[in-house]
Length: 222
Image 1 (cartoon, rainbow, N blue to C red):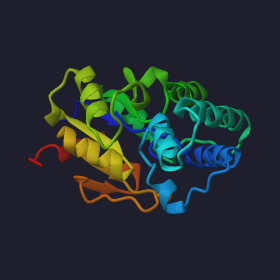
Image 2: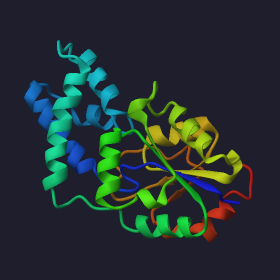
Image 3: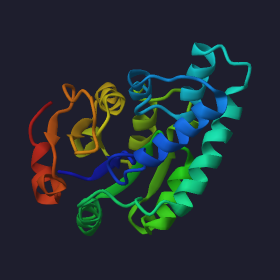
């Protein structure tokens, strides 16, 4: 029986990637560093602070990683307020309401900062549906480490066999797999060059995992 769902945020609930892309590249320009497309794609699913630590090491920057975080955050803040393209992923609000109406415990487990999480939840009025929110930026290890999913799962008070994760990134799927939780890989039009091989099932439409379909996913061992 399905009792809890752990949601990733970026790429699953809301597509902030275009805004993050603009904010990161604004930061790159300000720091005068050349980050290749391949290098940038490797950041998917990681917390901002860990990305900034990696950049400081890779480019031998004298700046503290937190300085980079603040530069990127300031740019993102402005975009979040003014960019008209920010919207929920198609079908996700119906999915959230469908789970909520069937008494499924919903928990957010995102690598985004809590600032970004709260901004998204307030803008789209998602707080009433979720019992807990976890930010990977506040934890010791980022995805693909399973820490965030272990903490999010612990907050549900249900057995892992009654829980699923919805993820769209390679690192997120690896983290769910390492945590031993059934993982739905969401392969959307926004997903680029991500590896879904460790996902237990792959979908491209949230209707495929509405409650009465999703609960059947957990009837077999994985």
